[in-house]
Length: 610
Image 1 (cartoon, rainbow, N blue to C red):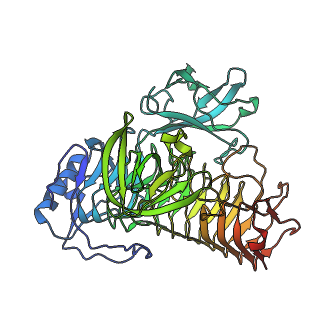
Image 2 (image 1 turned 90 degrees about the vertical axis):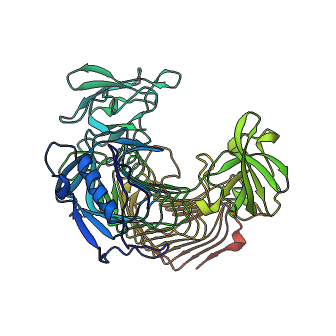
Image 3 (image 1 turned 135 degrees about the vertical axis):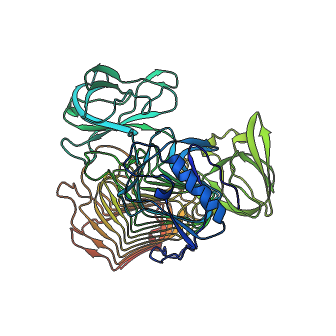
């Protein structure tokens, strides 16, 4: 049992028997029979007083360590607790659980509120933990990592607009929101007198003061500030609400290198970056009955500056169940791994690739041709080693089975266009996203790159979209394809762009598999689709389903309901560079004429319509 590191930031190490197996529904209701229940109040952790509660929690953990390996529940009463941050490499965080097992940290509900006081640090961090459960509490930052207000003037020629900051919100010049070098000070516009994200104008990114340095806002006096944008500004901005975020690399709740850990009935009200982040973890990471929402009873426009759930490089599924994600500053969910460009093929068994720390001996890897989006070879890793390649840090991968590349950086191909290698074991395979609500999301509802996953019984409502994105993403280097996916019994309502889109690669290969394959879309309902939206993005406005470079897709028993009243019509299903598609037993509650559109690269003889 590792010793506790009793730091200024809180580090926990203790025990519970809660185990959640990959691919099973989370067992959130089962009672834990502890050998001892402890209360933070016994150690001086008193809610609602002005004192920092970090030392009290450290004292409680010292007592817990003396009882190890007993099963312990550490309880927090209702009220507001203050925590300060500390460095525990590689993280700076507030409540850090490092190397722990079998702990339940339990409040009494969202009224047990953990306040993080440093926006340059993450909130709760579970690192190298096993069977740890955090439940029945809420997390917030004070000061907030964003501010907000109303646009009162705009100057299109100078690409600037003036914002009157709402009472009680911080100045956009406060250092906890913006620094010159590492914060991304973005501005997201919302509809006038509304908390709904705008659909007419681009998000605003700050102009460059100099190379790599963002221009700060100008204080005009009182609560009024001028935003200098590098994006187009329009006179029509006036009256729109705006959230100005200090997006960083710090997240409200992190699971890292952990196994069978869970967050149950946890509310996250603000986050400098992602609300939940899961990295390099194994099976059983579960988020159940949680909410990422603006704090109830406030006028806040945002809940998180970035994704509500960002999960990368995980050797097991992510299980998001019965939760609500609303007003996130980027995607609702992003699950996947990473591609590495192939620098050079040294021999049939050896590839030199971009540096990355995800590869292990025995991993199954795929080699993908970005032109077709197709996997052109599969092998397993025999050995991994670091080396330099033309002055760059690189990784040498030795493979058991030979592969043959079609393009490499050494050939003169740009990095993102060269063949890409990925370990499919680290893409969040076998994830389950069941019974969740995704509301007013700035980016995509779900980006699913992990194969063999299930998306079932969710609601997607009121955002630009797309609702679900499948397929390899070579621009962002996100793997893998999201194949062998089931999309079942979801409701998509008022999603402007494609409700479901699969894409990847520019051409359809007749020699290799399609970019995404074996996808079942069944029992879903689509309503109020096709609302006009002039902002370009991933997908297009109008078609509900778009499958490009996809094969073995079944679209069955879905309900295509009424479009948005402002819809300009058009096809409901678009197939491009696709083959082996079944479309059967669907219900159309709208005009069925010209509902299907195909391009010249679709193998029409393999399309089956019933």
